[in-house]
Image (tube, rainbow, N blue to C red; front, top):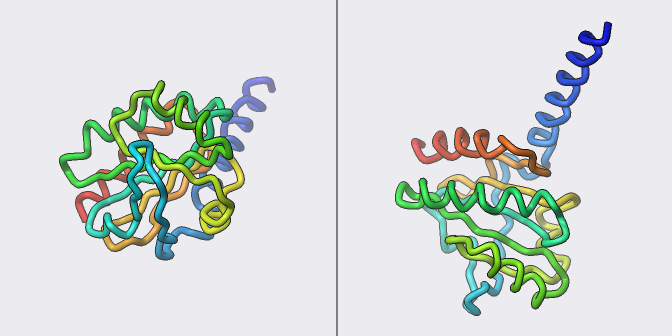
Length: 166
């Protein structure tokens, strides 16, 4: 019976993971636009990337999963940037100085932006960190994943490849 309950647990975890993706009210709707200051001091606007596939990763330095996910996203950015993928990291830390130190220490190759107000979090229904959103070339949200566990980046790559082919 022990093996049966383990199998049921795996099935339940898969269902929960799938529902975390499918349950987002954002999927199928235009991505809420934003303009945020970047680590380099320049402002970036999401709508500037219309025509490209955009992966937006909302993270916080206090969220342990962010520390694992950010390097995986950096590898994805390195692999798919030339094919038309834009990765944007958005820190939701209230303390921009600490977030900036953390982002610099992570040494990522994609832009890091700072959201220190509540509007964007509300627009994107942020509840748990990290959260990853994939936006297609026309600006529509196609995929949302709340949380991160090792191996989730494979699902991101599958979705990215599909969107890059469209």
